[in-house]
Image (tube, rainbow over all chains, first blue to last red; front, side, top):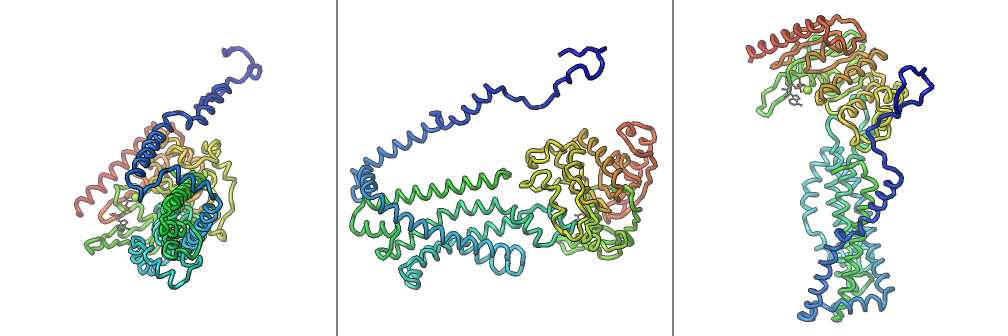
Length: 287
Length: 256
Ligand SMILES: Nc1ncnc2c1ncn2[C@@H]1O[C@H](COP(=O)(O)OP(=O)(O)O)[C@@H](O)[C@H]1O
Ligand SMILES: [Mg+2]
């Protein structure tokens, strides 16, 4: 566009404003969108994984022939699963329920204690050494005791899961609540923010990355807790752990493996769920 | 502020005199800079004024109140060297949050969006801090402090981490905001030209122990725009301040 020096103001269109953004044309935009959406369809993304999967499946087949007391052909496992999917689904839901209830109770309790620990130095000094020791202790080992004490119902499974999840959450959240940078605290202390306000507006949001870090640890742990407790109280109740215990005592290897595969799938699903939630909630956070 | 002293116990159990015998009166509505080599207790002085820490001797009053009472009354706005924004809140959210704490003493929320627009953040109101440049973050921090309508603004080397151009632009905006509110400003810096450009009064400090060695009045007309930097009067003040700082340094060396 050429500017005419003599033209009166207002008669010429305003020159386009310069910006630092290059907006693509609609066609380019559509092409870019398509490229992004179909990214996962490109072989470079899925081929390495699929290749390794094939290699592992072949290895499994060889293993099944060499060690028939450990491995079963994949076809048999698939057969067991497709024969009675309702049986596996029902037991999966039982295990999942125990794991999630235990995790929920453990989380609420651990978070509450983490707040107290981060606010009250005396409590912190008393509690944290124990928390560190217990978080590295394999607490699943007390499963048989819990079964003896609490019976064969859901209680020992939930308690064990809650216990196993409790300490990693406590340690992570207690750390996260203290992760507010000094200058930020100073800014809000100069306006005399109360401790409750600092907790609510600064400490709790700042702890969210740590909360998710702990969830990544604790979701798989919750499955381990529930399954171990089921193994310890086998034959008496439902759940994939019980399925494994009963089937292996009767030498039904295909069923054992089927249950293990379902557990793996369930664990992955939970992990994926945490990742998804993390991306939603922590969009502001770049590690 | 009278006879103020602040001690810190060091790792070797010896007390460090961070500030000693500080006598300073700051007239309401003036812009005062504090300049001195690092470690001379400038930040400590700000923490004492805002009631974050207590003096070990002497007395500080802010508008007739103790520092703690003044903080309780939301008399202060504070801008630290790092912008200290909350990464999960937008620009607007960061500027608004100080109004949601200690509500009882809040002095009313000015039009924060307009204030942000005024410093050129109009298109970034809903952006997260991670999407901003260093200068934009510091602008947000300044609006956060000004938006509180404080009696006293405390700024601790707010432009220390910025490049020359951004720094000058922000000085200009700081002055514009200040002309509107005329709060008392205590501005810590270690840039001589920044101190001359902005202040009515420059307080020169020396380290070990942290103390005031000189107070220089800057008698330049306001508003002070970019051009003033090249004027001979400005230059004369810069030289004077430089001399004063050199004296402060040599005193420090003799003492230690
Ligand atoms: N919390 C503290 N504990 C111990 N020593 C401190 C503390 N804060 C500051 N100091 C010491 O006090 C002196 C002044 O520090 P500061 O006020 O940060 O100086 P400046 O801001 O002028 O660089 C320094 O020697 C510093 O090491
Ligand atoms: Mg400092």
